[in-house]
Image (cartoon, rainbow, N blue to C red; front, side):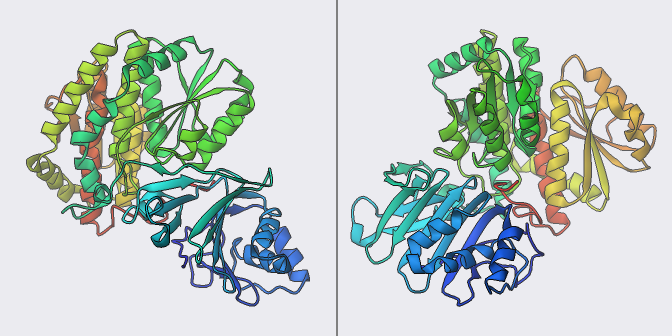
Length: 532
C-alpha cells in the first residue's frame, strides 16, 4: 500500500519541500492531491492559530493538518470532516500510518478506481487509485468511477472497497466497468516516443471513429436540427476541433453552431434555454473547464452531447447523449489521433444533419484510406528533412482559410507544446492587419491549402509573405511556384482539415526531437487538464 504523485505546480515552485505527499505535524497522516483548494489561506491561518506548523507553500499541506485536527473521530470520519471545510476542485488520496485503509475523495477533479482480480478471487484482489486510466492499465482495465462528493475507502486487510456519498451521507454501490483498452495499446511498440506511435495509429483510428451506430447518428442529427441554439465547447486542441466544426456545419449542413472556449462558456449563460444543445468535446472527459461549462449549461436545463475518448469519464456520464471516438489510450500530452477522430465524427454529424449521411461516410472512409497511404516511412523522412532545415528557428507562422483556419491554430499549438518554438496561426486574410510585421528573411511560414473556393486566396496570402522574405512551406494537394518546400496531402474535399493537420503533427514531432525536447511530456503541461 502506497501513494505517489507527479505534481503539477499550482501553489509554490516545483521543489522537494512542495512535492507530495504532505504530512500533518506528527507525520501520521499523509495526503496527495490534484486540484486547487480555494480557501487554503483562510484555513492555514486558522490551523496556525491552533499550533500547526507548515513546511511547504502548497495548498495541499492544509489537508493532512485538517485530518489531524479531527483525528479523535477515527480516520474515516476525520477525512469527512476535513473535506467538508474545503472549497474548490480536488481529488485526494489519504493514508494513516496507524491504519490499513486508503481513502480517496473527489470533487471536480477525476479519481478512478482500478480493480484487479475483482470478480474471480477476492483473496488476490488489488486496487488502484489514479486520475487517468493509463496509470494502471498495465495491471487492469476494470474500473469504478467516483462521482463528485464521493469517498472511497479501501481496506488492505479485508481486500475490500466501499463508496460513500458525502452529501447524502449514505453508502453507494458502484458498477465494475471494463473499458475495452489493453496494456499493449498504451505501449510504444517499437516507436521511440508515444507521440509518433499515436500519429501513425491514425491509419486505423479515423476508421474506428466512423464505426458508430447509424440510428444514433441519425437521432443526434435530428436533435441538432431541432435545437434552438447549438454550441460547441472545448479547450486547446479540442477547442480548435470545435472551431473547425463551426465551419464544417456551416459549409456542409448550412447550420450556424457557435463555438465558445470552455473557460469562457459560463459567461454566455444568458443565451441558454431548455431548448439549447451543447456539444462538448474532450479527449479525457475530465477537463476541468469543460466540466464547468456543462455545469453552467445544466443549470439552464440545456441538453448535453459529448464526443469523448474515455468510456465512463465524467463528461461521458454527465452527458445526455455521448459518442465515443474510439481512439484508444493517448499517452502523449500533445493530442494527435484523438483530434482527427473528433474531426471525423463532427464531419459525419454535419453530413447527417444535411441528410447526406451515406455521402459523408463515403468521403471519410476514402479519407481514412488516403491517410493510410500518407503515413509511410518515405513521407515521414521527407518531413524530417524539412525539420532539419528549420529546427533552429525561433518563430514560425501558419496560415489557413475557411476549414483550415482552425487547423492553422491547431498547427501552432502542436509546434509550441512539443518543440518550444514560438508559433502562431492566423487567418490568411488577417496578415495585413499586423502579422506581416513579424516576417523577416527566412521566417518559416506554413500555408495550409485545400482544393476549395479559397485556394487562390491562401496562395495569394503566401505570396505576400514570400515577398517580404518568408520561407513558404506548402501543405497542399498540388505544388505551387510560391512554395519553397512542398508537403503533399490528398484532395479530400470537406475532410481537408484531417489530412492537413497530420503532416504538421509529424513536423512538430521531429522539431522536438532535433531540439532535444521530449515530445511525449512537454514542460509545464499535463495530459488531462483537471485544474482550472
